[in-house]
Each structure stands twice: as structure tokens, then as C-alpha cells.
Amino acid sequence: MATYAIGDVQGCYPELQRLLEKLRFDPASDRLWFCGDLVNRGGQSLQTLRLIHTLREQVVITLGNHDLSLLAIAQRRPEAQSKVNPELREVLFAEDAPVLMEWLRSQKLLHHDEQLNWTMVHAGLAPSWTLRQAQRSAGEIERELGSPRHPRLLKNLFGNRPAAWNSRLQGIERMRASINTLTRMRYCDVQGRIDFESKGIPGTQKPGMYPWFEVPGMRRRETRIVCGHWSALGRLAGMGVYAIDTGCVWGGQLTALRLDSEDLQYITVDAEPYRKRMPGGD
Image (cartoon, rainbow, N blue to C red; front, side, top):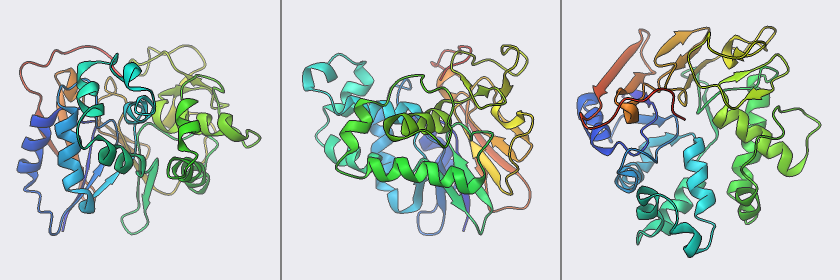
């Protein structure tokens, strides 16, 4: 039995197929963790969602910013949905869209496995969060997404304020701050205020900003963290963090990391030749 974490797929369906073949993935015994951003920009988001949905009993997903954006758009009127890009329109107007959206909405914002001692999140954790606090914050979002109140949350999903999570926040502002931290963060300051603009490699950020996993004085967490979201960072292993968004949609690679092995095992496939390499990405 093997457990693999897979970086941002973003609708790169042929690469996901090739990666599963390379892993010799066996649904009877193996498990897949997806770091989020299953959809958008790769061209085949509907096929990607359908494939992962068929494997749902063997899959753990932490939602990314693109996945949440799709869920938010799905709450709009059909005429508004028809104005998004063709790739997402194909998902929204598919016959099985209601099933796929309900399933996607039931996924996690953070996943922790005590036995493996691995935690998965799409983007990062606030410097003030312990693992328990991160789990509580993610759980608040997960419960809201799974409740009849989810349209209100998805309608108010977007926005850069508040820029930092703190325990005094309430209601929508508290949930938006948690979502921004868990799904959008790359750089922040020592108070946890997020820089939403900087996407480049460490060293290119504004003064006073740090990669979220290098903030001075951040809380210590006794777990290994696997994440995606930051394609410019590429593959990183250090400080207990393992970043595996290797920019497949930008012409890089789709990466899997085996989590149940003592030695780090990375398995990659190259992007299809037609994908254009671009800096950054989100």
C-alpha cells in the first residue's frame, strides 16, 4: 500500500493519466492526496474532475483557490456562468456538474494523518497557528461549505481583507482570512499579513515579507507539511515543508511525493509539449 501526494493538476488531464500510470496506482491498495487546484488553465478540467471523482474512495483533497473560485462561480446565474473561460464553462454546464460540485464542496481545507505524520494544505499556515489551530480554522470552513449556508460563504469568498488571521475575527471576515491563508498565501510579515501580489522566488519579495514557512518567531509544528500553490518556488524540501507545485500547467512537471516511505521519493512526468512556460502563476 502506497500513499502519494500530487501537486497542482489544474486541468492537466493527460499528465495526470501518465503520472498514475507511472505510479502503477492500484485503487485496491494505494491512496492519493491532491494538494488542490484541480482545475483551470490546463484545458481539461472536466475530464480531470471526472477521473478523480471516480477514484474518490481512494482520494484526499485539500481545496485550492481555483477550486473555491469554481465553486463560487457555480452559485451564479447561468448567464453569469456563461461569461467565464471555456474550460470552466465546460465544467459548469456539464450534465454531471451538480454531482461534481457537491462532491468538490465536501472536500477539505487541511488534512492531517497522525500515523504518517503528514499534513496537507494547498498554500500555507499562518505563523501564529499551531497544527491544532490550523485544524480548527480549516474545520470552520469545511463545516460552512457542507452546510445549507454555503452560498453565503461562496458569495463573499473573494477579497484581500482582512489580510491576516487573528482570533478576534468573526463571521465572514474570519472565514475569508482563513481561506486566504490556507489557499492563497506565499509571503507574509511577522504578524501574518499576506502579500497577495508577490509570486516570485524567495529574494524577490518586498522588504519585511517572508516565505510563510520562514517567518521569524512562527509557531513550531511537529508535523511534515506537503503543499502546492507556488509554482515559481518549484520543488522544495526544508524546514518540515515539502512544496510540490512544479508548474505543470506552465510547461513544467506534475509531481508526486510518496508519503509512506522513509526516504523521499519524487515521481514526475513532464508537461505536454504544447504547454507554454510562463513565470509565476497562481
